[in-house]
Every structure is written in structure tokens, then in C-alpha cells.
Image (cartoon, rainbow, N blue to C red):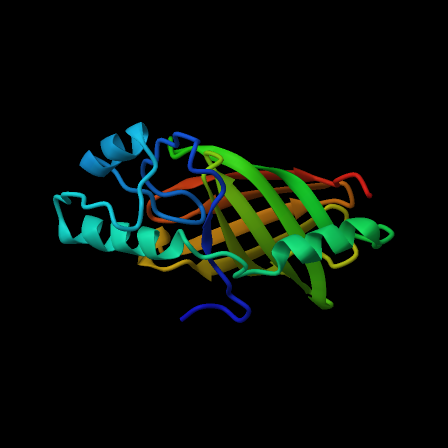
Length: 202
């Protein structure tokens, strides 16, 4: 069952980029084997026939091709730009900018986040990650404070079920100050880090 507020989509950023998709990323599963070799040479189209070695790979490809044409499925960009125009909020709320990095050889990419306090001990984090400059994906997670609420830095943890095509359940552990947000993520198929700082206000 997906957590409350879960929203996830994939969007093409540019078909000219030759992304080598391999393994899982924190936000979506990527094809391997023969499909990887095909994607390294050109950007696929929704109607391009590909020979797949397994049923799981076929399901993964179909999900990818269905999701690629989607646009406007998230308000993240609009909300993020609006947050940059507002005065910086106190504490750890508001916009963040940085990168994610797989420590299991599954790549890295740009990462942005919007953090909102929803309870005295809970922060709702909306993430948008990019992968190889080709795809982007959104994910929401509730981070529950595990340290003293008034302590600095704040330590928080949470989990999100991204679905079997994107690696299943991910666990997050974050250490957050007013200027840095560092976190680790872990699933059965991958583990890595998030490192973000405050972006410049517009």
C-alpha cells in the first residue's frame, strides 16, 4: 500500500541524451541486458518493437513506455519555483537542491526537495530526482523525527513503497540542519545517499 500523498511519474527530459540505464535507481527501475544495449544507441519510441528475454523485463519496458509520454503529472516544478520566490522559512522547511548517488553502481543525478512540517514530529518531503538527464521521477515520504524535536541537527527516518518496478520499499534516514539535508536510502536492490543544500532565492 502506498503511503499517503504518494505521487510518482516518469517524464522524458531529452531524447537526445544517450542514457545507459542499468539496475534500479532510488526512484525507478531501469532495464538491463539486451534492452540496455538497445537504449545505449538511441532513444526508444512507444511503438518500437524490442525482443525481451523475460516476462519481468517485458513488464518493465511496457511500464517505461507508458510513462514516458506523460507530462504535467506533477505540480512539483510550479511549487518549487514558488517556494524560491518566498522568504526562506524558519528551520528546515522549504526548498532544497543537491544530488543523489547510488553506492551500488546504479548511477546518480540531480535531486530537489520540498519539505513541509505536518506535525510536531513529522516532516513531509517531496523529492524530484533525475536520472542520466533522461528521466525524472517524483516521490513523497513522511520523515518522522527520531531525535529530540528541538535538537540540532534533526534526525528523522521514514519509508516509502515505490512498487516492484522501482525497487520496492525504500528506507530513509536523514540528518538535517537549516542549511544541509543529508540522508541515506536502502532497499533490497540498492542503497545510496542524498546530499542537499539550500538553493539561492530568486
